Image (cartoon, rainbow, N blue to C red; front, side):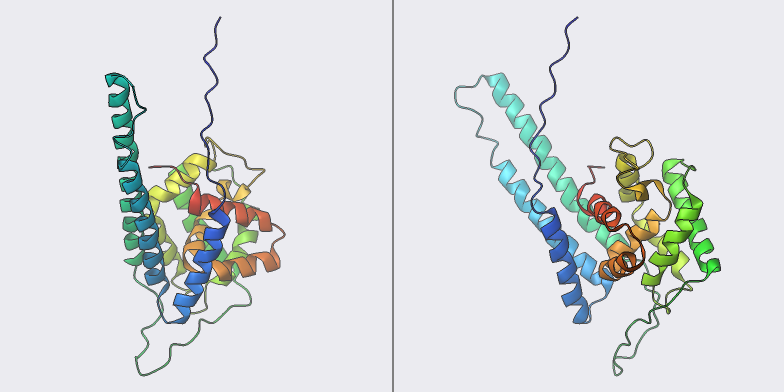
Length: 262
């Protein structure tokens, strides 16, 4: 019995992901220090990313007449169809990147409006998060997570332990309305979250709970929201109190760089 030939693995760019993540964090800090809101910063970065993808699409379109010399008409036709498919996918990715950023930016901000004549106050850090807050946020995160995955085999004790730390990256001014904020984030990023869990979550093609257990836990919804809002603050509280730095690093790469097409 003959076996089909093993599928050749396509080359994957794996050089710039960490550099890009560090650069994005630095740009976020600099623009934020200039007074821009997190939503505005996210939108600006997304526009830059979409422009880079659009530039790559232009390069791909230029390949439409570069089929190997001497190829048959069928090869030329197949070449053109492949170029069209790739160019179309890149255009979709660019559009989706901007659309998701605009959706997230449309979520109403919860901090109080500050008069232009008064300097904006810095967010107030919290030393600890109460059990009631942890439970309320976890219940909301569970609803989102289960609706996307159908999975209920997560460790609730672990969720509570992690949320007690992660929620320290939510300012005192935003704690009360955070459940609504997280739910609005989930609604605006439902497709993207679905891609994350569909690829790395329970039953996903690349699921590996031992590598990154967050993909199998509902508090990951909160981690995603914090990564898109205050990544440096989240990293600080996580690394100070949780002995799992590589888990957050891997999860961050999954969320930012390794989601497939919708």
